[in-house]
Amino acid sequence: MSGGLAPSKSTVYVSNLPFALTNNDLSRVSFLRAALVTIMKDKNTRKSKGVAFVLFLDKEPAQNCSRALNNKHLFERAIKASIAINNGRAAEFIRRCNYFDKFKCYECG
Image (cartoon, rainbow, N blue to C red; front, side):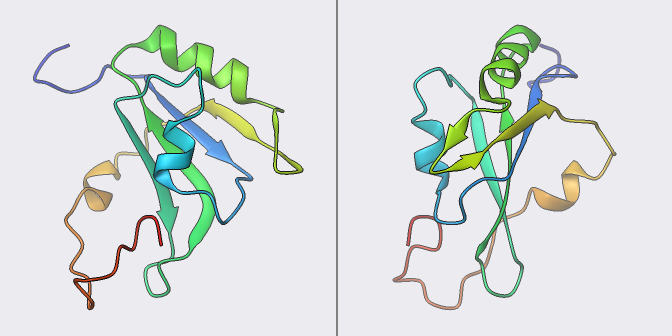
């Protein structure tokens, strides 16, 4: 790894997730040994959009995860997974969130 970043093609895009699923829930899936799990949320309501990005340190675990998760059923929903396509906008989403209520966890409820 150069510069401390994961190599290209090491991020998995996961869609059709249950809306109640949290980052912790997804990271606990047995075959995931991910460096970072990010469930995308609505900017205003902070509710899940049903999609996530799972970052791995290498390409091979990402490909294995993509194959294992694709068409897997989770809470009666068929999960879709594929290697994420880099659109160059990742930096826009890597920022610290300023929450209105500091005593409430917006990640796990």
